[in-house]
Amino acid sequence: MSEDRYYGVLAHASARKLAADACMTFPLDYIVRIEPPTRNKAQNAKMHAMIRDIAQQWMFQGRYWHADDMKRMLVDAFAKAKREMGEPLHHDGRVVPSLDGERVVQLGIQTADFTVKENSDFIEFLFAWGAELHHQIIWRDAA
Image 1: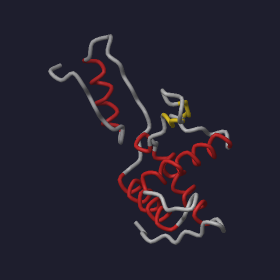
Image 2: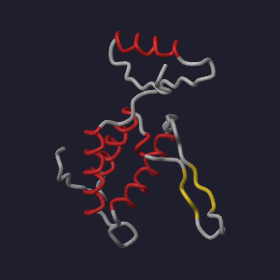
Image 3: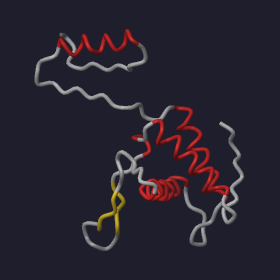
C-alpha cells in the first residue's frame, strides 16, 4: 500500500467494509484504533457561546474572567460532577503541584477530546449551571 495511514468514519456498511479491507493491507505490527467521534462543529460553537455568556455576566472572586479562564473552571466543575455521578470523563484530569511547588496545575482535560456525548452532557451542564438562582445567566446566542 502506498499510503501508511488510513482514516475513515464508520458511517455505513460500505465504509465499514473499506476499513476492514484497508486493515488487511497493512503490516502485522500496525496499530488499529477505533473510537467514538469527538464533538462536532455545532456543539463546539454552542459550548463556546455559552461560556462567553457566563464569562461576561457572572463575577467570580469579585471579578469577571476571560472566557478561556472561565472555560477551564467550568470544565473542572463539570468533570467533578461527572465523577460524582459515577461517569468520569474518558480522559479525566488531575491536579498536580507545579514544578517549583508554589502553585497547582490542572492536567488532562481538553474539550477538543470530548466525545459527542460528553460535549452534549457539558452543554446540558452549562444550561443547568447558568439557570441556578445565584448565576441567572441570560443566553444570548441561540446557535
